[in-house]
Length: 133
Image (cartoon, rainbow, N blue to C red; front, side):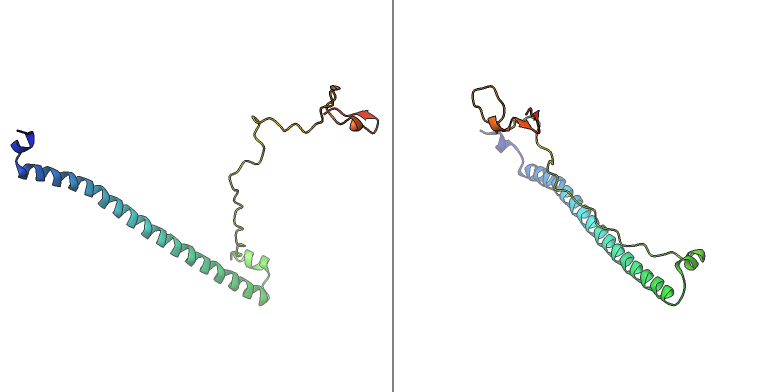
């Protein structure tokens, strides 16, 4: 006889349900965290949009004041803020190396004429000085 026949069916099912409930709690927690993150990102985007709209309104009002005859110095001395120019997006790099690897040998592009010379025989001097490669 096997050991399974000595177990109570209700006990086995209760253990299985308990294991499923434990695992389900993790999924529930993950769902709640994902929903909270999504709501936070939505709120952050709304705040960025509202800030951009406010910056646009400030720039227009400042320009209107200057067009009406106020100087930037007068507005500054009155304690009014000048609009800040929009920030330039940062340059992103590809993350690729910009210098060659140091552990790879350079390609040999010199001629080997058997004389021990490292360059072409007609290009050994440049302006009277010997060129070493």
